[in-house]
Image (cartoon, rainbow, N blue to C red):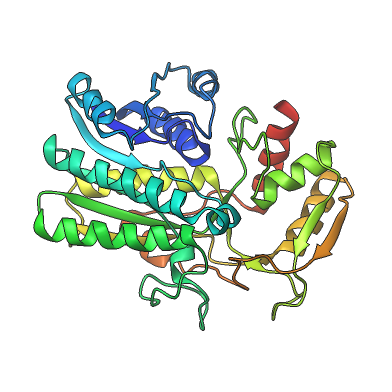
Length: 338
């Protein structure tokens, strides 16, 4: 059975990807996560859902010595799925150097490990934020990369360029870059989801925390954008659909279906909804009235973005299986369980 290393495996998208990898049955998983921004207890939730124990190597991959020592114990890895990165837009505006140091330093070590230990396949967690403010929607993989609105987006832009340059001189390395739009929701079991114990930055955990009474209210950052209701438009996609794409990307590389050794795919639902529409849909699905206020625009936000994901559909065979109702139902079930 093929063994795959998942960096950031105890995090939100990482843990759901491990769940889908284990359900798939073709891969053994090695999780690597310092748990700086996640919890070791996630491994128990994964086992509860899948019935398969997961060992997390609690190592900071920015520590090259400690990271490389893992490959002495795991010498048969066929691919790395690299999630480990800081990802808060507002925090990156406040602490840019931390984001450059962590996000780019970790990727540098992953790339060096691929060369040193002859790991042929790498799946990179990128973001639609690399497009910046776009003039034409929906976004395709050929949409020009724009001016980054925040250091987080800039680290993803630089990361993609690092991958292209390294792949160019190392043809033995096969890379897939997956540009996520807005992952939301949780495992449909209700036993795993987005964990934001301190100060959540993403919309859905803020909504569910207000609904359950952990937070007093929601601030909608701006109602004066050029959109249907003045709030930002985003392309929300169920996290399990995002997770499934990583398995398809691994299969794609292992089966030699890639035309180049550095391929790029957008992962989105193909349509956008506004922040206010998400709030109202949650209210309709749960019967819970949300307390929200309109605030000023937030630094780092762009007005609207959503994806054309036909390239991933055609090349990877990837389709969204979950709709907005699944997103809300699973997120709310996870909040109630947690």
